[in-house]
Length: 275
Image 1 (tube, rainbow, N blue to C red):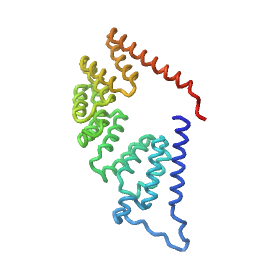
Image 2 (cartoon, rainbow, N blue to C red; image 1 turned 45 degrees about the vertical axis):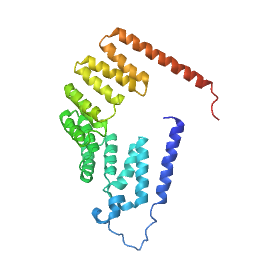
Image 3 (cartoon, helix red, strand yellow; image 1 turned 60 degrees about the vertical axis):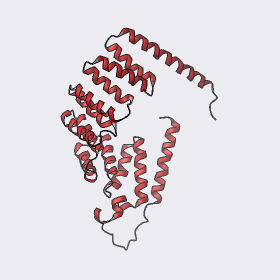
Image 4 (cartoon, one colour; image 1 turned 180 degrees about the vertical axis):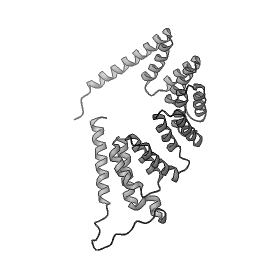
């Protein structure tokens, strides 16, 4: 992350903190007895914003999101803890579960947060994906497959994440042809991406369908946002299977692209630096 980008992110976080402080309630009158918290289901305001009110809820949520983008997981957790007990907003509970996951919290704690997500949004594919990731990390691939399949069955066409996760586990279980079927079904419903095509190519290679893998690696290279990285994946495929002539041709393409980038860098270096 560049220093300028870091300063902008810090300024955003500081600004949100100041706004949050401005919406804090005034100190209570000492003589007034404390009011008991109302049950969650009793007020419409709590359904939307919890006991904090709309302004503070929105600010804490925005601050937590900014901290998550900055990978400041512990700080994000503190704000999500402040609002999660008072709201039925499933996004809060899912973000809290993900933060716990990134912090390496025990399975039981993450499971409790995910149960709240499913309570307020029963068919939530993102919760199932996170469950699958927890089991995959624990090398419990059969249970991971179960949760990834549930996520795919809920919204097969919306996001490649669940399909790719399921295909990854199937390949790890030495079932690459099933992985190919999962990825091809998703491709039939969505636009292809280099990331998804690379996973499909690896599954085809694992299934010993080298012609199909070759075609898919080439297509992934064409779609890759970084042409050099895309060609490098194709080059590694050629080298693994000792396709020497094809490897030399791709090496020449990569060298040409690197020379062009070098020229651009050198020209940029001649520009005067901004004051």
